[in-house]
Structure formats: structure tokens, C-alpha cells
Length: 121
Image (cartoon, one colour):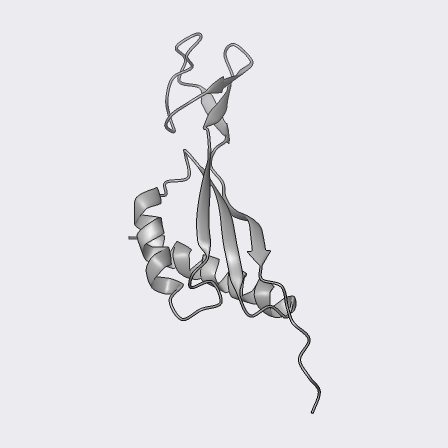
């Protein structure tokens, strides 16, 4: 299951960002996951619950925004919606469709908790 390694990568991004902004807590993580990204969303949610324990994002809200699949049909020269890689063009039926969107997975947004000034020693 590659979702566990994806979740660990997300944790690393979140922790690095929180550290670079001197924040001790992340309140929300917004992910974009393309329909063609070969990610099982519910499995990723489960893995995130596991890997975010005892981290700066332990109680963070996880928001997953789906990105629809789209491709460029070489036969009819149109951008078309596709649900899976290697789907035919819904206009002409050609299988010469190159995926152009929906293959990505990225951390789009992090909401960090407000930092409080620490007293100097």
C-alpha cells in the first residue's frame, strides 16, 4: 500500500512547514488529489490518522479536494474529461488521449496555529 509512504511524505511537508514558521501546531491540512493519481483516498485518510499521531498535526482537520481527470484528445484536438487513464475520448471514441489533469497530488494549504511569543531567558 503506497498510501502509507504518501502519508509519511505529507507529514514531513507539514512538519517542515510548521517548523519553518515557528508553529507548534497545524490546524488544517488541505490536499488536492487527482482522480487519475492512483491514490485510494480512504486508505490515505487512515494512514494519515496513523502517521500524524504525536506530530504537530495530530488533531488537524484533513480536507481532501478531488481534482477531476482530463485529457487531450489527439484525434479531435479537444480537452476532454476522463475518469481513468486510457479512457477513450467521449467525443470521438479515440484512445489517443493524453492525461493533462487529475494526475497530481499536493499539499495545497496548511493552516498553522498562531504562535505565541516565548519569554526570553
